[in-house]
Amino acid sequence: MRVFVAGGTGVVGRPLVDALVDRGHEVTASTTQPDNLRVVEALGARPVVMNGFDDSAVRLVILEAGPEVIVNLMTALSLPSRDYGKWLAATNRLRSEGTQTVMSAAREAGSRRVVAQSASFMTQPGSGPTDESSPLYLEGPGPIGSHIQANLAAEELVLGTPGIEGVVLRYGFLYGAGTAIGPGGEQAVKVQMGDLPIVGAGAGRYPFVHVTDAVSATVQAVDRGSPGVYNVVDDEPAAQAEWLPYLAGILDAPLPWCVSVEEAEKTLGVQAVYYGNQLPAATNAKAKSELGWTLEYPSWREGFREVFR
Image 1: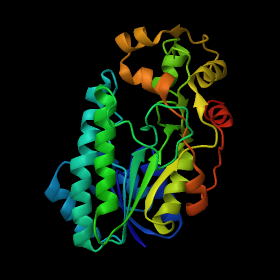
Image 2: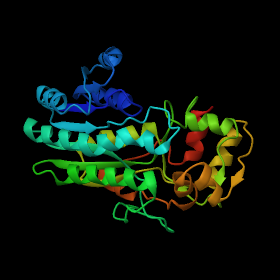
Image 3: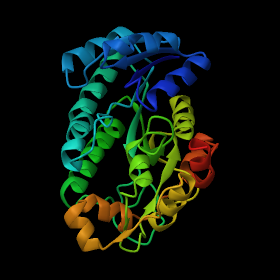
Image 4: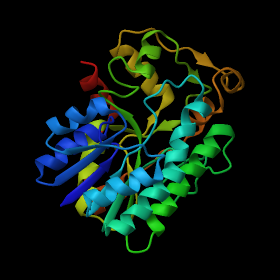
């Protein structure tokens, strides 16, 4: 099929383009950086430069490609995350404004299906486990709530555009090459330096997924599965009190220290409290059943060891 990958040189985009080409699809992949055009060409795809905030450019590029399927992976998450809210601002715009442009262009181009990236770590605090129908934490404080609202706006556009089979993939926390939890990644470096603490009881259940498994789920979603939302997470939700010391051990790093919920909110931000101590577990049963998805790394335990071996 003709497939257009928006954000084709990112952490998931690059191996996804490679996998789609390998399966015989005719792939066009966008990048914001002209220097990456050769990267896309080397993968066997047609490269285009596209700014996701430029409505006319997005429309023109998609109409020229004439894709049967669009995969929307556009984010701005490769930038440093010193201020969590500011770090998410551009991605929030891409999820709301950018998705609207992509969906409009998809209809005009006659595309059949749109597969779009979202996040599985958005549900209301609780005991879990949660699935795709669980209530989202829309009233979450500060950048938590605004990010979840932007994701939901994007999901509603993807699922509600007439004539389009909308598929939303709620990725878990990505780990592996090029991610924050990979060699040289921001979170990994913090663990190595002893700068990433356990918040409160560390009860937050992280939904991890290896990049390789995120890619395989996305490949499956290009040509199978009913329209709807799918959690793309591994089999073992990871309590922060478990995975942080485990990763520290792999990296020969100091054991993580503990910080109270009150101190974490004050010094690290509300997101540290939500993810570290409140996030409920998420299940991947629907993606396995309907997409025929199998994981190479069912648990973050072997996945972390493979990434940092």
